[in-house]
Length: 436
Image (cartoon, rainbow, N blue to C red; front, side, top):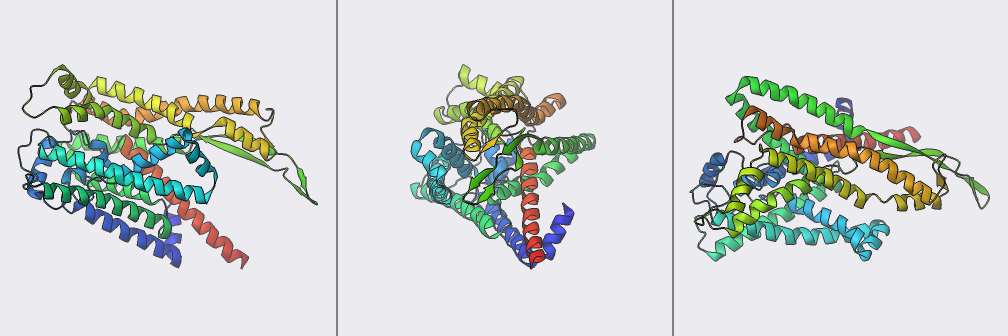
């Protein structure tokens, strides 16, 4: 890995791309720390310190690098774009028009990207409105009585705040696309990686200040988790594929052997995002429908006691089962064995020992089902590790465990993809130099 970066920095055009990417990341972090207009930064920081990590928006706060609880310009982070991308991807299975665009290649993908941008803006408006409403009602930071928006009685102030946060999401989306086009690539994922990495030093220091032994255990656990995640993320089942020889004109084509790679973690981190969003939805509904002066009923008490508290075994069990379910759901939607079998048959490919067509599709379904089970269990176990740590240590109030779950899955996955992209660009340049 270090060799790849050293070689990349020694290559002039790649060095420019890396420096350009670092510049975009600096702009992104500046926007994440810049308070939105009309927000009292002093009161926001005071409320955030009292919150101690318990919040319905913890997943968005993770992706935004803490910008959400600062009510900054980039408060929503990249979460609206992620949600819009997932929705468009799911709609390609439901809407025939979207499915046709997906098959049209680069032109169709461009239209789907444009739809994703429009949907991102719509979701950003909804999320920023909900966020401002919670802040105005004093429910965003729990029991904090500080006035985080001093001019909340002015409709103009609230509208400007919503517009600013929505515009911030648009700028983040533009910055990610700039990294993809002119930088080292993988733009949106790199911004998420940056947001998560920005929180690690402060949260690590908090753990160290409380207990040196706990910090040492966290570091050891982090190394073990990272090594395990890297091992599983690289694991794949390679199905051999043989292409028969075909005569086209006067030339013979085919006769080659390759393989179809099926990753153990075929769904990536998407099931974790689905499960987290669904698990925090009841608390969001309770906060929006119940006023601060209203007496809590049995439903709100159950939600606050068992679903919001991440060290609760009800929360841990529900989180794990939802991840397993959404892993099967997402893999079933995104990977179609029948289409893969038809594509292989169309180009003269077959799996040795398996007849083309329907038998090939059934074999792919069988293999996919076998590897999806360990993949779903792996995602569930890694995601609930921080929750188990909180329960075993009895530190149920401190929910900022920086080296487990979603954070490690995203950081390791993005890191591996970034290194692969840099190495592939280096190989292209080496081959060009060799041919010349």
